[in-house]
Image 1 (cartoon, rainbow, N blue to C red):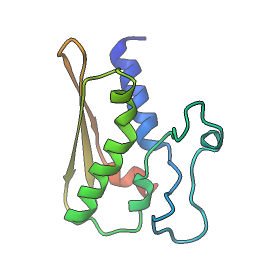
Image 2 (cartoon, rainbow, N blue to C red; image 1 turned 180 degrees about the horizontal axis):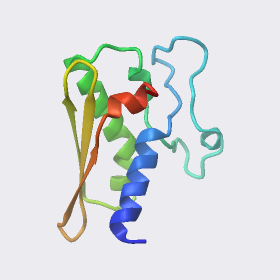
Image 3 (cartoon, rainbow, N blue to C red; image 1 turned 180 degrees about the vertical axis):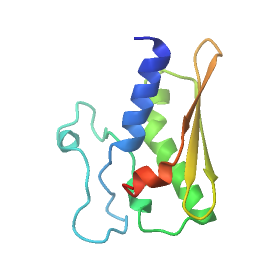
Image 4 (tube, rainbow, N blue to C red; image 1 turned 60 degrees about the vertical axis):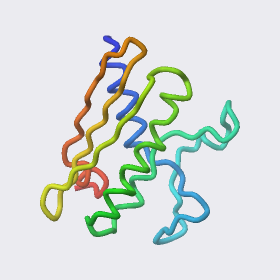
Length: 128
């Protein structure tokens, strides 16, 4: 498997595995989601996934795009912390009233960049 394939897999898992909601996050019911392994992290406070799922019942407006960017950046911060890349950029793009795409740009130690496009992220978040 190539480095690009490994990075693509790591980013996909980081974005589309649902991280546990924080204590201040508004949720519809008592389900705060999250991966069970986060209960026993090898590094204190370490978590897998993103909180993109929290956007599922929201309207696709400018604030939603900003929150999507923040949640994606939070989910990918480990790539920086672990020294796997030197920069992570996330660009959300609204397409109509019911479509959002995410572009993730990773800058590697060598200076090479890898752009990953996740089309119809809104559909993935809403399971449609």
